[in-house]
Image (cartoon, rainbow, N blue to C red):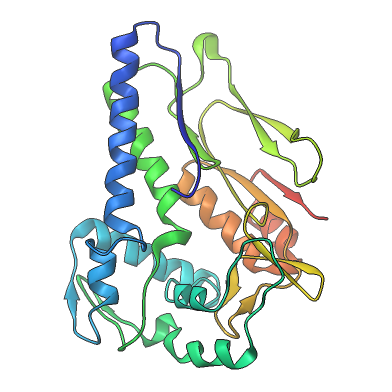
Length: 278
């Protein structure tokens, strides 16, 4: 999931609480195992090694492909799950190493959802192309885990995977969960804002942990699939509240992809949001 995962719950009975934790953990491991691009034994690896041959996928994977296609349309092509191949050139470790233009240009022919043939339930990639669910997988996992937690317990539960989170309901007495939005400041870690959340989810997209310095300018790990370079003019952090973590993550990512127009995009979407710029 790319970061610490936790479950918070208001359950007095230890056995009941452990049941919730076990269900959430099993869900996280299942989705990590099935969709991580770092494994060699899952559906993503099979698709990426297909070398132009068609691959039939199960319903869950097909649903993620449908969602990725929707994101591609809504972002005018800026959200592209085939752009993960550009990670061969870029290393977002906070350093200042940037790839040579020729290194990026050599990978661009392998990028482009429009080059992918997706006819549910069969996907066909051009030889050398890859797909990466990293932009949507964590939020999907949060929603799945939260639904499972609600099925095994009527208590209030908060599921947090690497800063993207959702709650099953308000806490005892109708009190909301109080969630801190991490500050982008380099000093002592204090929340930039506290948000009350009685239902729904929060998701954040930004460059707090994954960035590169280009000519002294801090650039996010989010790449523009058109030129293979980091999106310019984007905020340092975008947090969105929505009914599901998947929806919140979609809006946060789309806002980042809008660069300097992120705030305008979120205002037009009429959602609760918090933007941090340097």
